[in-house]
Length: 287
Ligand SMILES: C[S@@+](CC[C@H](N)C(=O)[O-])C[C@H]1O[C@@H](n2cnc3c(N)ncnc32)[C@H](O)[C@@H]1O
Image (tube, rainbow, N blue to C red; front, side, top):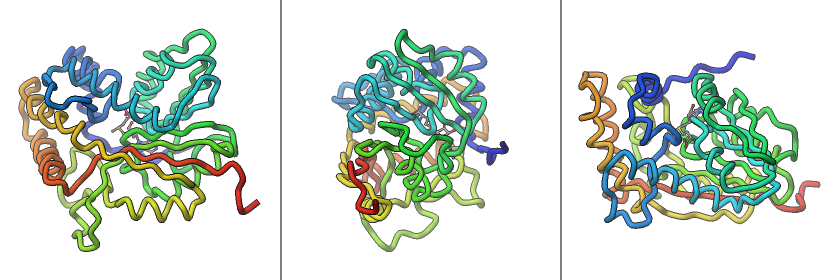
């Protein structure tokens, strides 16, 4: 099966540094490739180890929102290098874990690094989040950690998750959400084909109102929102120090510029980092 190609310059850089054996990148991004969560942001130390630990905690906060438990079948969509699955594998028993990613290079690394503990199983699959290769009503939990903004169509992803979840199953995600406002210019929260984008194609135009409307139309109930922007802010302090660990090149300019824009918007309260979760009803009104 052919998959749409994935153009994510930030992942090209991370995979290049990991292949070189860069220990700073290994500590910071060898397991998770997402923002960090600091319970006490004032205590961030801005080291690679501190960043790696905060990234681990972000996964924990997200899967806690999905109420993961022993004996469940859990899918992590856009699973990156397998860090969230590795964490679930370490904390849960008799679980069936699945990782889906569009990028075969990431899956290769994840397969080599994440080995199921006795009693658990882990399967990695290549595929697109908007066409989940899973049977109807086959999963207890679906997670999408900091990746939904790359997907071609959020509604289609939600419909797919609704299809594959068992009744009562849960979905938890993290996403960047702009302040509720109708008049944002279109280019403001979307990558454009005009400027180079270090973060690849992304769309962070989904406000909480849009999430509420779309998720209810798909059939989900019980949307929970948690604004953790404050807990993620040390991410930017760490990223500002990262170019010092790399050979400076013009290729890094879009990275620096885009990260500064995200930081400014987050500090001004224009952009929030949210953990969101939903439940599929035990009984469908449509049945
Ligand atoms: C910011 S990374 C997050 C990775 C991982 N969830 C983590 O937290 O470490 C975004 C991920 O989404 C994946 N991705 C992007 N588009 C996708 C799609 N259409 N289907 C599946 N995965 C996709 C990327 O390959 C990448 O692994």
